[in-house]
Length: 576
Picture 1 (tube, helix red, strand yellow):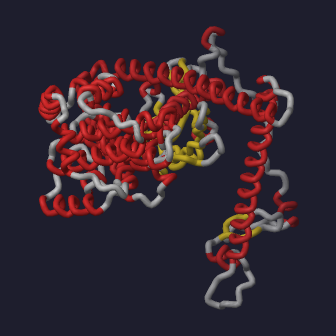
Picture 2: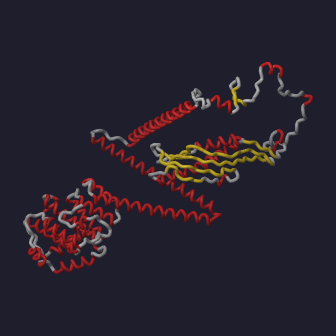
Picture 3: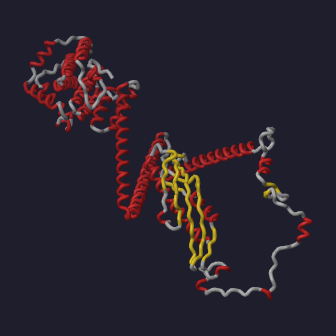
């Protein structure tokens, strides 16, 4: 980013630690400044000396004070730079007579600009500031209300961008920012002024404003390397800040884990408090998200009303507009769901055809067994009624069945009926066992098949929907265990012990999977149901956006899975 008639140091990339040029480059740039002059009329050294002699001694004292303050952040940088600039100009320019001829004013501004460049080269930043301000003061009356010609505007912007750079090097970012803003008031598309103000914004910690100015500069000069480097530098700085925050959070997590381990007996109480806190934060976040969504929706409605009025159409009420939008969103969601189901159906059909092709019995290869031949070798065969049974099973003919006759057990007569066992008292009937265990000492019934199916059904139907995401269980895998109902001592007990893994997906508002993972349930046990553990195995597919909201959705899904297990227990008790 080359500044007209300035040494390369003025056009270098802005950094928090500016460096001085080596002496060779300084001499070369002085020669260039002498060759390039925006005016055809030369400026003599004698005129410059006469102007310096006419300065008030107070101005020199002010310059010395300014030079002493250039080593650190100036106290004057905290006030309005325009008022400071006016005071300094009155002090610096007080001994000069401003010529009435516009051409002479332009020549004097050019002279002050060259003086400022020379002072900057020699490292005298305070005098450079005074020279640039004198040049700016000489041109102000020629550009009142930004009505000056292009030559005046160009020279004025050049002086102000140079002044902004020198202020930045004097560690006065606020003044540098405001001077660059004055240059942009003259020419809002000036890339150099945007760059200077962005550097000052970054120094002041206003990263968003700095990024905005740099992006505006790229719009006017897409190939500017300095602007691109500054944008990349800001991006790297933000990435480093995020890494530090992540490391800090990791340390805090380790500290919390150690604190929980040390608390031992109070762990469950702390966990309950943490759970309540998370629920409260989730409710607050949900309420805030709803308010933000409503605010954004009303802004969209206002834009629609403005657009309608611009097209000579009547404005629409918010209720009618909101109803139309919801109808459109519902229709779009149905279309997406329909397309998704059709795609799943197509893939399922393709898999079925592939399986059928693999089971084709009409193979011409003698080395490959057909499905029928393979089943025969496994020791199974089909009976006449279509049942699959053992290869060694013998099927009776109709003649053999007639010879054997009816050999089913027959009920004995009344005379030989056994004496019934006396029934227990009415108050213990409900707790007693079956007919052969009227005493209710011990009886156990295996309910593994029913409980396994019911538990898997409850887990697979688990889901949670927040404002922006939906978490649901995709599959329940690796389920092992058993269950039974036991009657002992006249009391009925429900016993079960399972463990499994739950695969889940988290979808966004467009039903696109943004994250997925696995939850492990190592101990679903009737003895410690209230302390059931759910292990988060980590992400199979990590979220790339709204990470905190996705993690909160996952944590709430864990709570819903616990509730599903409790629902299974209730069904178990009701069934048996």
